[in-house]
Amino acid sequence: MLLSSSIDEAEVRVCSRCIYDERVNGIEFDEYGVCNYCHQVDRLKQEFGTASPAGEAKLQEIIDEIKAAGRGKPYDCVIGVSGGTDSSYMVYLAKEWGLRPLAVHYDNTWNSAIATENIRKVLSALDVDLYTHVVDNKEADDIFLSFFTAGVAEIEASTDLALAETMYRAAWKYGVKYVLEGHSFVTEGITPVGRNYFDGKYIRSIHTRFGRRPMRSYPLMTFLRMIWWTTAARIRKIRPFWYLDYSKENARSFLEQRFGWKYYGGHHLENRMTAFLHGIYLPTKFTTDMRNNTLAALAREGVLDREEAWVEYNSPPVVEDELLSYFQKRLGLSEEEYKMKMDEPPRSWWEFSTYKRRFERFRPLFALLAKANLVPTSFYIKYCFPAKVA
Image (cartoon, rainbow, N blue to C red; front, side, top):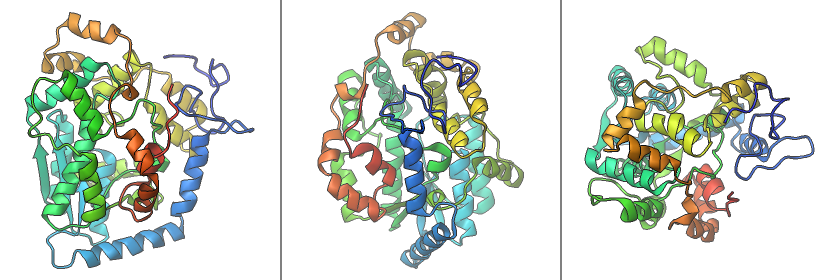
C-alpha cells in the first residue's frame, strides 16, 4: 500500500495533525483538515486529566481505593502481561505505588521466546506471582485457522478476548476487584472499528462454521459472562496511562536498563500470530497497516515529525524471518492452500453473527458502566455506537 514518500504528494487526503488518511474507517475532517480521531483524543485528555496534576490526583484516588479493597487479600489488583512494553512497565509502576499485583497471562502458544523471557525477568525481579491460562495448542490453532478460512481480518481476535476473560477469572478466584490494563490512548489512539472488531458471538460464529475441534480449553467470554463480570462481580478495569504523562519510548529504555528486558522489533510483535497479523496478513490481504495507529499518535503528540511518520508508514513492515513458513506449518497449510485463501476476496465481521447491535441497544447501561470504570471507555466509544463500515 505504498503511496508516496511525502504527505504533500499523497494520493489520499491525510489529517493535517496526525497521519490518518481518508481510508481509515469512519474518518471525518474539520475545516482545518484535522480528523475526528484527533479531536477524540483531545476530549479524552480533558476528561481524564491526562498528563496533568488533576489526572495524577484522580489516579491517586483510584490507587487508594484499590489498596482499601484489597486489604486482607493476597493481591489487590490483576495486571495482564504479554512481555511487551506497556504491560511490563505497568507491573513496575504498580509495585512502585505500593500495590500487590497478580500478573495474568493468556498463552495462545504463539509467544516469541523474547516475550516469554521478558515476562520472567520483570516478574522475578519485582517478586510478582504469575497466573497463566494455557489453551490447548491444537484448539488455539483451530480457532486461528477458522478465521483464516473465513477470510476475515480479525484472525487474532480470540487472543484479545481470551486475555480479558482470563483476567476476570483470576480476579474472581482471588477476590480482586481491580484489573489494571497497560493501554494508552495517547501513544496508541483508539483503533477505529473498521477491521478490528471482536466479541464472543463473533468468535463462536466463525469457529462453529469453519472450525473442526470443540472449544474446551478456550476461555470464551459471552455477552452474559461480560454482564456478570461487570454488574454482579463488579470488577473494575483501570487504565493508569490514561491519567499519566506516559512515554512508551522512555518506558522501553527503562525496562532495558533495569531488568535486561529486550525489545522485540515493533509494536505487537512479541507474539508470532500477532506479528503475522500485522506484518503479513493485514497488509497483503486487506491493504491495511495497523502501524498507522501508533505512528499517527506519535505525530499527533509531536514525538515524531509527520513526514517521518508518513515515510515509516509507507515502508514495508518488519517481518521475522521464516514467520510465514511457521504460520503455514502450524496451521497445516500447503503453499497452494495458503495462496488460494489469500487471493480470495476479503470478508468482513458484519457478515457474521456478533453482539454489535446488542451493545448498541444497551448503550445507556454501558455508558454507566464506563463512568464507573466497569468497562473501558474505549469499549463504549468503539462498540456501543453504530459503526460506519466500508
